[in-house]
Image (tube, rainbow, N blue to C red):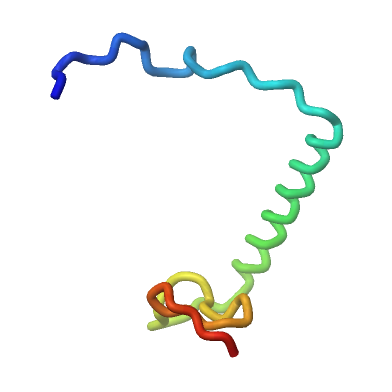
Length: 73
């Protein structure tokens, strides 16, 4: 093991400059953010489960998952 500290400074200065986004890329990012906001709003409107198993609904993709094992309906 080495007890020396890093020779490079940590922080924002080491980040690479961002590339200029095309209008299509900006539009896609805006659409994705709108979908995420809509999903979060829909998810917040659902009633809270009391005493459930926690996490996402295991049947949300049409199959059932428990501890990484999946069974199809």
